[in-house]
Length: 465
Image 1 (cartoon, rainbow, N blue to C red):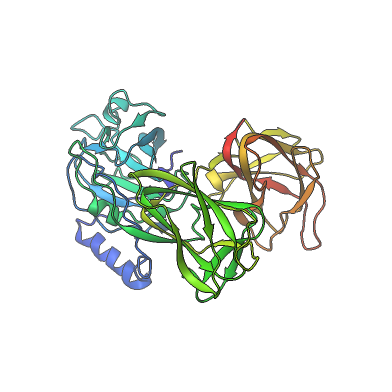
Image 2 (tube, rainbow, N blue to C red; image 1 turned 45 degrees about the vertical axis):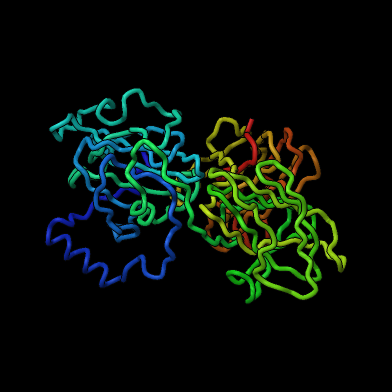
């Protein structure tokens, strides 16, 4: 079933007095869900329709049983939908209440995901649900195709749970190109998006401060969070052993904000694979929120910054390096971590594993085992892997081995159920072939009620073989 069932929602009939009153009553009762929320960064893009329409600010507005995850753009059926950014498309086809349901997922080259929902399913001029693919998607468009910004990709319609409403595009922006990543408020991006006129919009000049805790920053090796009131956001993250931080951004400039002091040493930095020398974090007194390095002006596009602990000492002998925040002219892009869900055929299972659905799980499902001899083997080519699992009061210990080395024991017990937990990672590895094996042990800690183990997904810096 397409993602529509989760995040495309029955449009409140704002054109009718009854519905308007109902929405107002909900907002008065529960308060606006947007209250107190920071505005999302404005993403450089073109308007996703061939003509401009009113942009409702209905992100996180109350819906039956959940909150609205996008913005509805009201438009006539067969209005052309355009790729707001360049990227790769997946055409999603399903059924809803016995009628065809169409949507499109766009993996943006900028590192974000974009959802186009309620695509047309009708013969033009009717509401018959018999329009077929020819009246849903652009001619010749297929899943896996790379589209350019402004390219025609689909038609506005009312398929899915919008059949009883006016036609519209339900448009979502997600933090990363993973469909399960958090949604973002698209309002400001849509309001500022120009209509496509054959040329891309100018590079963003908006500067956004991102805290070091942002999920799009990838930390390899051992990094430690440290709380202090003087740091940006109240914390910074440091390393004093082999470690790297990888930051992808779409834009023209990135500044690194950090703490300097007598315990600090030097880090190596590269931009798009080019050596940019070292950053010296030493100062004779502790200083917070310091701009310690900048990429300088870069060509507009997606760039990769790698900050590496070197072990080189500062003037007082300290070797610690840290990240407090990054200031980006543009937007942070998704890290090049690939999420591989647990049903993937490249994950090699032995023994007895049970698949279970859960909306909170990565990809909507996970797999668990409580049987002797059960294991899963993941072979990958790259430099990093993280294991995502469910933790629970009924979960026990798993054994993990990396490249046939010393086994490690991972405790999956938690006092309450928790999904998408990063329970173990390989640390920084040589960029080559590696093998991870996760095994059931039948052991548990004293608080656990059973010995289950689980796998939800793996994320790799590289490719699963």
